Image (tube, rainbow over all chains, first blue to last red; front, side, top):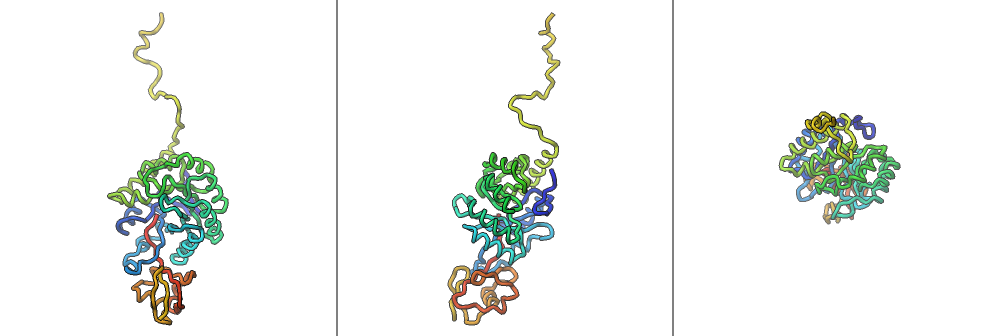
Length: 264
Length: 67
């Protein structure tokens, strides 16, 4: 596979990690290191005034020399809120990459395509590198690409469900059509899901819940990293196409009983 | 005293209270947060010189883990 490049930046790992739900920042850092991860997402929230700002802020655990920090706009219910969060993130940390997420529906956290497209247009004009989180809709993926997003991030299954590549067929079409990198995000619950995404041609995967909530997040991060590497290796090795009928792997000549059945 | 809203909650502060003073009262380290005052992002360097107007809406925001 060619090296992964998004918005002119090279990535040595096709596994991106979300930093939510980890029991401790130190575990998150170790997991990211175990995965050789070079892109992590973070969120923005109000400071809890009763507790004050944390003694041990998340950001201090991330080395910007080694890992690209991409704030998300999680919690935004419309384009306006998403744009506001992205601008706050840029003002606060100088981050000009953003994972655009607009999820008005709390039950399934499915992204709003219309608001996402609107926000993407504005944020691209604002100079952000926009990575939009979308339902696996090939038409929307094209529209986002046209307004200048640097990647598209179709969901495998709803956020945090660990259900794998439920949207497989549509993601396949997105990959076929895309002229920007395709990052499968959300719902990947097992390393095999991540491997499947890379094998079918996705450029990268983003995993959070499956790693962060595992009994041992650092080992799970390694497991995902190995799966992604295995899939990359398999792609490089030149996988063969599927066949509807059996194709014998053993020779079809020289069977032991051929002699007895021979004529004459 | 004037009424302001901080992170969605009503609060009273002394007239002339600055953003830096508010953060100090709340025991929040300015370097770790972003402050929005009436919908406008405030540069950190301006915290000590920016007095809070009456009815100010202040948002104090931080980076947290997220996917």
